[in-house]
Image (tube, rainbow, N blue to C red; front, side, top):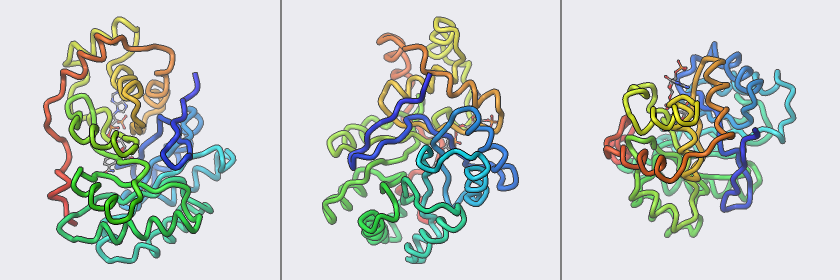
Length: 276
Ligand SMILES: NC(=O)c1ccc[n+]([C@@H]2O[C@H](COP(=O)([O-])OP(=O)(O)OC[C@H]3O[C@@H](n4cnc5c(N)ncnc54)[C@H](OP(=O)(O)O)[C@@H]3O)[C@@H](O)[C@H]2O)c1
């Protein structure tokens, strides 16, 4: 079954399930992304900081899939953000990807101690109004940083890409994002391979009931909560597994049981403390 599209607050649409390439070695990335495209993914999530934009672009061209059928996200690196050369960073991403436009450009981290994220956001607003990028958003922004950019510019990001998975559900942030019509995009959706997906009855019981795997149950939970999600894998069989989640539905009790797994503990850094 096809991956559904969500409509963002600027009217653009995005495939709700994408494919992430964090920690995919640059020399492996072209092959991995070609396989993901062959498996049916049409939304690729990269970043300048992943050092694999060039290989993502090569995979896109090698696939022969029309550009307008693909959705490409990349992100302003912390290095470029710090340097203040936001336009140069955008142009370098375009050149590495070797595509005419980026569908979604994100500020990767707010780095609040640098006090530069508002200036970076103002640049992204320019890029959007110049038609350089279709949509603009942020990543790892907390409520206070979102409030700051929205109050200062009157422009809300279309997405906030944040760590979110069954063990870390960000309920307070989600409440705020909902009031501003910011779509949630979840990174580390499978817990980055850092916890045992088979260790939680809420996941394994639902997996048995629906003849799916715990990973598929988790990804289905992300979809049913209305979020965009971008799992990463370098294995073709897992690419197929992770996209095969549109032919079943978790019931209310199963959704509730997964909601109860929240520990409030992050796997990644607290965005308030990541400043370089
Ligand atoms: N904005 C940010 O700051 C930020 C931070 C982190 C990530 N991201 C984005 O979010 C994407 C996803 O997050 P992530 O890569 O950190 O973590 P993730 O997708 O939660 O987990 C990836 C890990 O799960 C394993 N895996 C994938 N499918 C599986 C399956 N069906 N069963 C069991 N294990 C499976 C992968 O192993 P194999 O590869 O060996 O299969 C890998 O070890 C990234 O690739 C990146 O695009 C953004």
